[in-house]
Length: 134
Image (cartoon, rainbow, N blue to C red; front, side, top):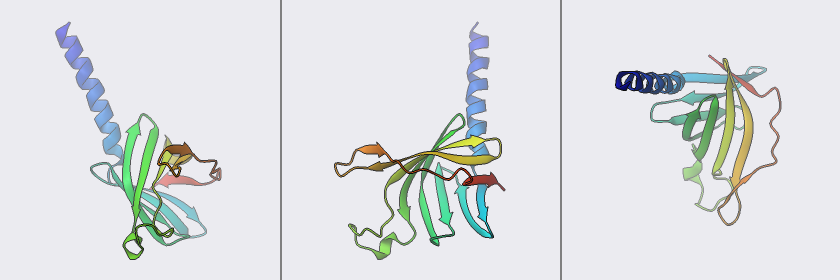
């Protein structure tokens, strides 16, 4: 019985680790007429997101729970150029995405209200805003 529990634990633990490892060093791209937005997933649950439209890169952390990807946007490449309270700084936002086979789609977005509480945004992501694994 103890051996069976150990085998089950190792199997579950290994499968979860393998799933997380699959994101590390991957790039997921949305291509619109040659203009590409992309996610790059790195070690230690860090990510980089590039927006072709704005020319800005944002950084933050991610967590993977099954096929749900939770993103916490923390800073932008140009934040240092603006004062702490500037509206031009990258906002603190959370996203929920879903991984379906070799694509990532947005499911939700959360922002902070003036009191600092997380509130689900009414923002609607276009259905064709889909990122394909490279």
